[in-house]
Every structure is written in C-alpha cells, then in structure tokens.
Amino acid sequence: MSPKPGDVVRRELDDRDARSARKEAEAALRFSEERLRTVIENLPVGVIIADASGRLTHFNRIANEIWGGFKEVDLRSYDRYEAWWPDSGNKLTSKDWGMARALEKKESSFNERLRIRCFDGTFKTILHAATPILGPEGEVSGGVAVLRDISEQARAEESERFLSDSTRVLGLTLDLDSLLKTLSDVAVPRFADWNFIVLISEEGIPEKMAVRGPGARHDAANEFSEKYSIELTASAGLGHVLKTGQPEMYVNFSEQDLGLKDPRARAILAQMRIASYMIIPMKAGPRILGALAFGISESMRKFDSHDFWVAQELGRRASAAIENSILYRDAQQAIRLREEVLAVVSHDLKNPLAAVRLNADMLQRQLDRPSDPILKIRSAVDRMLEMIDEIVNMSKIQAGGLKLSIREEKTQTLLSEVVELMRPIANVKKISLEVHADSECPNIACDRMLLFRVFSNLIGNAIKFTPENGAVTVSCECDGRGVLFSVKDTGPGIAPDEVPYIFERYWQSKRASRKGAGLGLYIAKGIIEAHGGKIAVDSQVGRGTRFVFFIPLAEKGRGALRSSYRRGAA
Picture 1 (cartoon, helix red, strand yellow):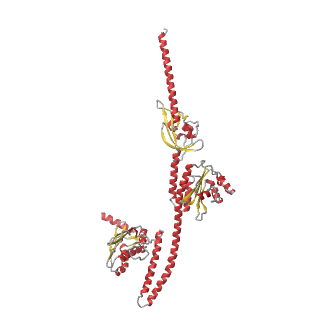
Picture 2: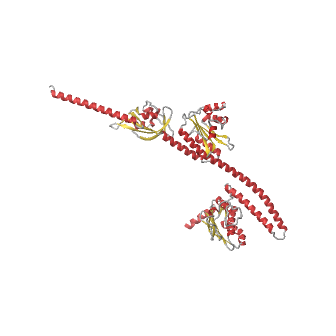
Picture 3: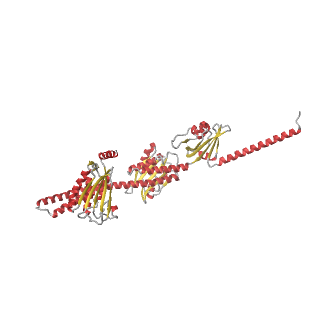
C-alpha cells in the first residue's frame, strides 16, 4: 500500500526540522566550545588540559608563557616538564605530577608549590592544582591543571628569609675573623657564587679579609685577591666603591669593566668566569668600613635590581655587625691595656708603700711612746693600699675576671667573726653592734675573704654614718634558696634622689665627708653578684638605712633544708 501524499509531506517536514535542530545544536555547541576556549585562553592563570590517555591537548597562553613553550607528552613522559619540591629538593617523576594523579587515581590536588625549570633554562616557582574530568558514568575522560607563577612572591619570601638568617648568624659572634668567615658562608652559594670582603684599616689602607668561590675555582679567587691590588684612585671596581661609598652593579660583567692593568690579574679573573658582579660599600655613618663584592658564574643567572637591593640590605646589616665587632675588639684591647697598666701601677706602688710602712714601724719601735705623726703615716699608707686594692678589684669586676675561691662556710660562725672584727671600731663611737642570727641557717657557698670585704664595707659605712650612741644590727635568715643578710643602722639615712646611684663607681653622698675612692659599694655589689646573689638598699632620711643581700646555699645545706621541709610537712 503506497503512502498517502500527506504522510510523505509530514515526514519530510519532520526530517527538515530534525536537521535544522541538529544544525542549531551543533552551532550552539561550537559557540559554547569557542566561548570556553576564549575564556580559558584569557584566564590570568595557566590552564593545561589532557585527554583520558594523558596526552596534553591544550595549553593556554599563560601556560605557554610560564613554561616558555610546549612539549608533546603522554602520561609516561610528564617528567620532560622538570620540577622539584621546594622543601625536600626532590625532583618530580612522571607519576608525581598532579595531572598523573588525577588521571590514574581520580585525585585532586590544590596549591602545590613547585620549582620548575622552563624550556629556556630559567627557573620559576609556581602554584599547581589538578583535578580529573569525569564522564556521565564516573569514568575519567580527561584532566585539567591550573598553574600560577608566584616567582616574585617566592623570591621576596626567600630574600626575607636570607636577610633574617643573615642577621641571626651575624649576631652570634663578636670576633672579627669569625664574623667575616660567617658573612662569606652566608653569601655563598645561597646568594652568589663568589664573595670578596675588603675592610679599610685604621691607616686607610684596603685589606682583603675574606674570599669565597665555587668548588675547585676557590683557589683562583684566592690567587686573584693576592695579585689584584686595590687602587683607591680607580674609576670603577672595589677601589672606586671604597673611595666614593657608592654601590656598583654590572649585570653583564667583563674583565674590561675593572680596567685591570696587571695581565696576570686579568688572566685569573678570566678563569673565574664571572658573568655578573656587584660591589656594595659597608658604612658606619659617613665612615666607610669596607666593601662586599658578589659575583655569579656557576648558576646561569644575572644579578638584577632585586639582587642589588638585597645586597645593599645585607651590606647595611653586615656594617652594623662589623662595627660592633671592631668596637668590641677595641674595647678588649683597652681592657687588656688597662689591666697591664693597673698590674704595673699596683706592683710599683705597693712596693714603696710597704717600705714606707716598714720604716714607720721601725721608727715607732725606737720611741718610748706612740708618735702621732708616725701613726698618721701608717694610716695614710694603709688607706693608699686599700685604695689600690679597690681599683684593682673594680677593674676585675668590670672585666668579668673576679675569681672566686668558693668553699662551704658556716653561716653563724662567719657572721660572728666579722662582727667581732668590726666591734672595736664601733666601741670607739659608743655604737651598739648587735647580731641577730637564725640558729637554723644552713651553710653557704662563698669566697670567705671576699664576703668579709662586703661585710667590712657595709658595717664600716654603717658605723661611719651612725652618730654616737647609735645602733648597728647585723642579721641573717634563710629563705629556702639561700641566706638573706642585712646590715641596719640608725644613721641619718640616704636621700631618695641619691639611692639609685649608690652602687655606681666613684659615687659618694654629697652630705658626707669625701673619704675614699667611692668604690666600696660598687665592689660589694660586684662580689655579691659574682656569687649569684643580689644586693638592695632601703633607706629613709632621719630613720636610718638597711642594706640587704642574698647568698645561695651550699649544696649540703640546700639538701638538709629540703629534708627539714619534708619532715615539717609530714
């Protein structure tokens, strides 16, 4: 039965509608794909797309710019794109790439930081992410990776770490030679392949202090530093920087830039193969301390403005460290000179003073009764010998060289002996000298002679400033960690504006007669602190003064004290 004419027409119309709908759908799909391609191409990040086999099918413009090109690879050859994990330094294998993990394990990765070698040989730091593209049944139909160039950010972070690490290690020593070696170790190879350090001597002469170069060519650096004389009249190079204090950078360096006249120095410099070069002055205010020179030869890069800034910042930090080191060295030399002078003066003064005292004693023995002039001579000699000892002890305290002969001493016995030693002086002024000692005070660890000196000074001052018929009380009590000693008087007290200064060198109260060198309390403080203790004062005008100081317990005493505490607690 033949179709009716109406059925044929309807089928043709249906086919025509279907073809038209298909064309519209295909056009819409092409438009959608083109739109997606345009979006991907103009995204501000790199986008890489792979098919299910791992073949890279699309690199957008930014991805090409980041890598510097494109290589045809599949899942097994992703390692042609060279990359390293920054933390471990391990190189990525083909399977380590995020795209490979997305395709093989359906694994998504986000913000993985990688160090890559571009196809032009340069290095960059990128953030990388990858995720699988899944089909309607959940099967992997491809993968997409996104990468962003963060080289400038990573470089800024590394520069901050480098400068922070440099500051830390430069602060570890004050010895100049160690400091200069540390400075070279910091710079090479982390910042440069070569480093020269030059300091200006006190006579204004450049002195090459440290040289550091890569591997086997380090010897060439040393040889160059020996044969290359630094001329302050040069129009470029180290000499010019040392003279002007202005930094120099040679992005593309050649031997001619330095204008070397010595052919041997030029030949050695050629062997070093320096491709990029910087010289940074080190200054302390207007004074030029020296210069840092950095070179690149091995690492296939060139210095740029960022490196120039980092080098100058390192130069500023090195300048501060070197200035401190020079000041420390000069201070140590001054201390040694002072010690030598004091030793000579002490020896040369004590001998004639001892002779004067000996002769005064001989004259006194020849007389029937005490002679006032001879007694005054002996008193003056004793006071001069005491002042010499005070100056020598002050010097030792300042230099941290006060030597202690620590022994275990019985607290009560020590206190009784020193009070009995001072009692005749108190009796002369009719001053009551009392002792209040805790009978259970454990033994202390101290230098007996030096602690006697502390007590003699504090009790002697108390007696001196307390009026007749007054009282001086010496006491001790244990606080668990040591013994707390105090010397209290009923003297006029110390003015509040003078209290902060009484432990300083050469200090004497304006209201007192100026006897002595004003070193007694300074020395007492130094002796107590050398024992690991502390000293303090409490004074009120018109009500007297109380000095308190702490001395640690001896180990046996500390153990006995702990035992007694345990027994008491039980």
